[in-house]
Image 1 (spheres, rainbow, N blue to C red):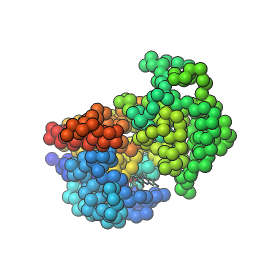
Image 2 (cartoon, protein in one colour):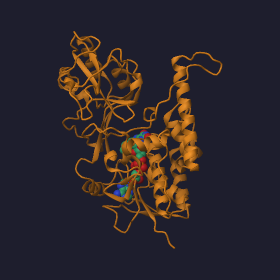
Image 3 (cartoon, rainbow, N blue to C red):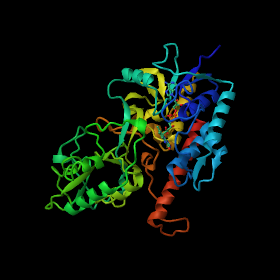
Amino acid sequence: MTVSPIHVIGGGLAGSEAAWQAAQAGAPVVLHEMRPVRGTDAHQTDKLAELVCSNSFRADDWTGNAVGLLHAEMRALDSIIMSCGDAHQVPAGGALAVDREGFAEAVTARLLAHPNITLAREEIAGLPPAEWDSVIIATGPLTSPALAQAILDLTGEGQLAFFDAIAPIVNLESVNMDVAWRQSRYDKEGPGGDAAAYINCPLDRDQYESFIDALLAGPKAEFKDWENVPYFDGCLPIEVMAERGRETLRHGPMKPVGLTNAHCPDVKPWAVVQLRQDNALGTLWNMVGFQTKLKHGAQTEVFRMIPGLEKAVFARLGGLHRNTFLNSPRLLDASLRLNADPRLRFAGQVTGVEGYVESAAIGLLAGRFAAAERLGRTLAPPPATTALGALIGHITGGHLDGGKGSFQPMNINYGLLPPLAPPKRDDEGRRLGAKEKTRAKKRLIGERALADLAAWRAG
Ligand SMILES: Cc1cc2nc3c(=O)[nH]c(=O)nc-3n(C[C@H](O)[C@H](O)[C@H](O)COP(=O)(O)OP(=O)(O)OC[C@H]3O[C@@H](n4cnc5c(N)ncnc54)[C@H](O)[C@@H]3O)c2cc1C
């Protein structure tokens, strides 16, 4: 009996990994890549898995870094992106950086040589034909306009974004609750009956003025010529708001009304920064209305001026870019299928993850899910205690819907994984300091993840 193919659209990081995984599982694959027939504004070559900017896959240490843990899990699952990255690495300290040409050539050659893979150099300029009954769409942040429009028509207004507007996200355990307090504005109850849904960080007048000075002086990232990112209302970068007038933020996202400082009820704050819960675990909190083009180093410095955030650990820093991504928590099921048309799966950056490695990781899962389905098997997502499971869990349900535009692209980070209590003492019984506890906790999370991944794989 001939098995009909899985069609993978887009031969970037995610599509290449998805095609490889499905083909390795025994399913026939047709990989459709539009380059060089049609280019994008960022890609320069016709190679599969081209890295459009940096050549780094970031930190490679699974014991101390969440993306390093993702590397380790992907290696354990025969990732083509990781094995070609390892084979073409260049010196980069603790990071995995690659020779981009050697890397993309190796991915291309291995995919072309695979007996189950056929490569079609063509743009899919609309919804895939009805007879394609298993499709993975992995067309990335620069999805061609015709396909993007077709997806938008299918998913509905507001469900496919063409720009991201990212506010920073803070790990809850790094917020100083001796300064910050929980309260919703005017103690208004949310749908769940919670009248203290936000974390509030108060600024007095001097602190506000110093914050505005630092915001205005901080270095900003430039837009690329082709990005044409609009400054749409309700989504202005905070530094642009501050440029319009020093009081603008105090009447916008930093307005202090309807709030009473629980630590100091008699003193009215001059301004307040609010944090809103971002994930179901309650470990990540986003800075409401704080989308920004400040450079990353400056963001850390400037946002730690906010009382309560002096030692903030940022799970994600802010940004504003041209991007194309779905409102995945609403649109996709747990195996990345579109609820409205389950023959279509999505993978890569278009699902709302961010970065080369995360995009490839979601490609890896999409390829495995599609192959299992094609070959009549069932495959559950990896456990939430693994980096792969945490990432897919976030985009298919873990993110808490905070209204229009609240779902924004996310890198892998420890805040997405269920927390573990840090050990208090080392093996010799010596009390651990704060930094040692953090290191020990990360290692334990890594050990738990790799053990749970091995069990999932065996199952
Ligand atoms: C300018 C820019 C700079 C970036 N810099 C970095 C960085 O430094 N580090 C980092 O980790 N991430 C970076 N990113 C994010 C990066 O794009 C993703 O991390 C990663 O490439 C996404 O992988 P992907 O497979 O989802 O998309 P891509 O790798 O972009 O692959 C999508 C593929 O789909 C093809 N395609 C699009 N539409 C169609 C269609 N209709 N039919 C057929 N083929 C189609 C494209 O040609 C492309 O090959 C950057 C993104 C941009 C836009």
